Every structure is written in structure tokens, then in C-alpha cells.
Image 1 (cartoon, one colour):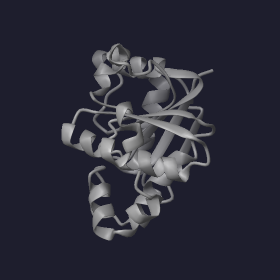
Image 2 (image 1 turned 180 degrees about the vertical axis):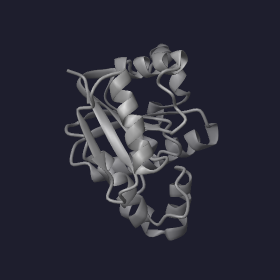
Image 3 (image 1 turned 30 degrees about the horizontal axis):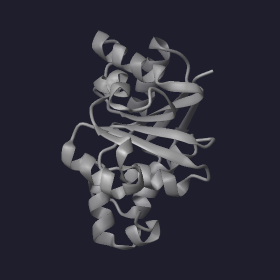
Length: 196
């Protein structure tokens, strides 16, 4: 695996990696300020699934930032991005599948684990928990969290007020979050749910 410090030293390459993760016009420092807080929700060593992992750069960063030993997994429906993730995290290439979140419950048939210590899932403003299909998908993801594991839901889209409304909607429809954090950039939040 490429040395992390060498990876982020090349401004053009790191800009491409950040944009391949759906964050545009950001330097590495801005990326760090926007995403490091996810690391703070990971409290032990274990498996980490990134749902919609894009090009794997967030997972690569979390492996570097975390004081815990993490085994990364990713699912991503966009094949070109998935191939970049496999290259970026080459020792773990077998842990990445071209798949969407709707397919999570059946991926164990392809040799993928059926549960994880941590699942990180980026939520967008238009995702409605109250729609039956979305609710079933959410339940399938929740069932894939191991006991004492965490589902880490990241909210990047919209104002903090809109994000708070999304988190409140989740808490009304499902259950109270065990923790909520705001990024150093102060424009993103996460909520985690801990499996008891």
C-alpha cells in the first residue's frame, strides 16, 4: 500500500482522490477538517464497512488516522470508483465489492462478512426513512452491525439545521442516537447507533 504521507504530499493526486470521494474544491486540510471526526466514533479495533465507499480514500484516511487496527471493507455501485478503491487499499482488495446498499444482506453469499464492528454510511438529504423500501434497507444495514458495534451515519448535505432535522427524524422513526458529533469544519455531523 502506498505510504500515506507520500500519497497526500502530491497536491494534484490528493485533489483527485478527494474529488473521487464527492468533495470538490478541497485541499487535504479541508478534507481532514470535514472527515476526521468520523475517526472519533471508532473506539476499538475491528472491521469497518464503508457503504458507498467511492474510491476508498476515506477508508484509507481512517486507517491512517485511527489509533485502532481496522480491517476495511467497502461496497460501491460505481465500478470505476470501486477499482480505484481496490488499488488504493491493495492489500485488502478482496474486501471490496461492486454493490449497492440494497444488496448488503445477500453479500455473504459472495464470501463477504455478514456483520461488521463498524459501518459508516453517508446519508443525503433526500433519503427518507419513512418510505418502506428505505426503511427495510436501513434495517438490513442495522442488522449487519455486530454486538458492541456502531452504525455511524454521516450527514454532509444541507445546512446544520437541515441535518439536525434529519437526525431528529431518524430518532423519531428508529431510536435515539447514542452519540452525535460535528466536524471541525462545522458543516457536517454524524450520529452513531450502538448495538448493545
